Structure formats: structure tokens, C-alpha cells
Image 1 (cartoon, one colour):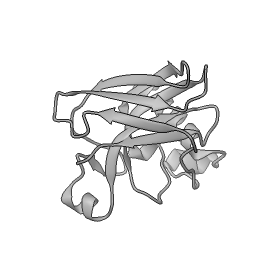
Image 2 (cartoon, helix red, strand yellow):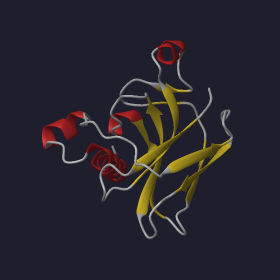
Image 3 (cartoon, helix red, strand yellow):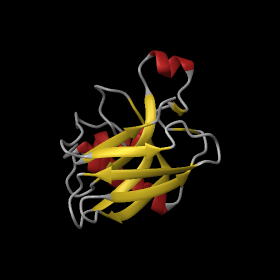
Amino acid sequence: MKKSVVAVGTALTMALAGAAAPAALAQGHTPHAKASAGLKVSVSPSKPKSGDTVHATLSGGKKGVNYVCVFTTFKKGTSLGASDAYTNSAQTNIKAKHGKAHCSFVFLPFKVPAGHSCPPSKADKKKGWKCGVAFADPKHRTHYAVGLFKF
């Protein structure tokens, strides 16, 4: 695995995990991080097809923060960590200007290390799993938000 992918996965885990024990980080587990109040992520298109360019916009961000932007799977009430993220899609050092940050990806269906996929499988949908784009601040470990697709 490339060092940059490992570094991005570690940065996302740290951004979302808080002060988790090193053993928990190595296993991809996170304590209960929750999305930050005031942050919002919008995605377009809301139902991307393979090959579509997805645009994500963070609003309510802090000026000068270097955000990480990544495709992710998400389930309400669960902790979000690197094992839920498609780290190959990660973009780093995205600065928030006037509270907004932007990133763009080419959407290709993916599967994350935790085993969930995007678009979600029927079994994942039944269990409440969704997918979308997450913005996270690696320095303030619980400062993140997710914009969900409508699959």
C-alpha cells in the first residue's frame, strides 16, 4: 500500500477518532465521534452514475483550515472512521475560504475496508447504510460533516 494512502487513512482516522488508543486506530475502530454543528456538505449530482464528476461543497467551515475530502460510507448512530472511507479518493489540504471548501471526484462504485459499498447493497440499505462525501479537519478531531447521496 502506498505511504500516501496510509497517511490519508491515518489522517482521516485521527480527524474522526479523537484521542483513540493506538491499538484502536490500527484496527480501524473509533470512539463515538459526531458531526460538527454548523458544518454542512452538499453533493451534486445526488445520484451519481459511474464516470460522473461529483462536486462537494462544505459550508460553515473555518477559514484557513486544511480539510480532507473523501468518499465514505455512513450509518446514523455509528462512529465514522478510516475503515468507512474510500481512502483512494482522498484529497487533502483543501482550504476553507469564507467558510466554504470544494472538492471534485470522478465517481466509480467502491467498497470500503469495513465491507460496505457505494452504491449501497440491498443488505446495507436495509441496515441503514448510505454513502457520500465527508469533509474532516485532521487537527480538530471531531470537526467533520458528511453529504449523503440519495441511492
